[in-house]
Length: 85
Image 1 (spheres, rainbow, N blue to C red):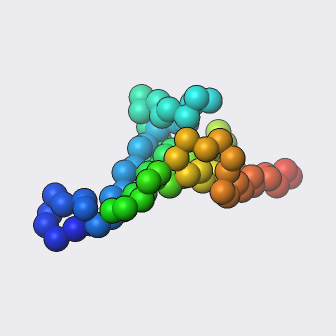
Image 2 (cartoon, one colour):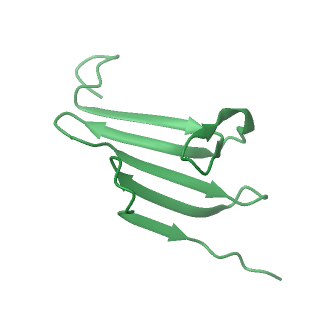
Image 3 (spheres, rainbow, N blue to C red):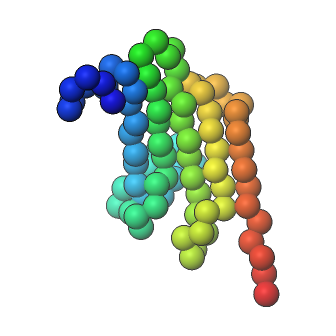
């Protein structure tokens, strides 16, 4: 988001659809329509915010994780437990 259509000088969002791999890359060949990774940045930010998402076999969200830059310590990690019947 910026002052023009292609201007990302103020705020930039990148979405990657597919399945999240163990190394943090996204396999776009396994695209089910769910977001696997979102990268948020803006002018003056040294390291982007990276949110990753994992889903179960029924495409329900089971993990959401946020990191800043290359720091392996999560700023936010949410693990959702399935309800078994």
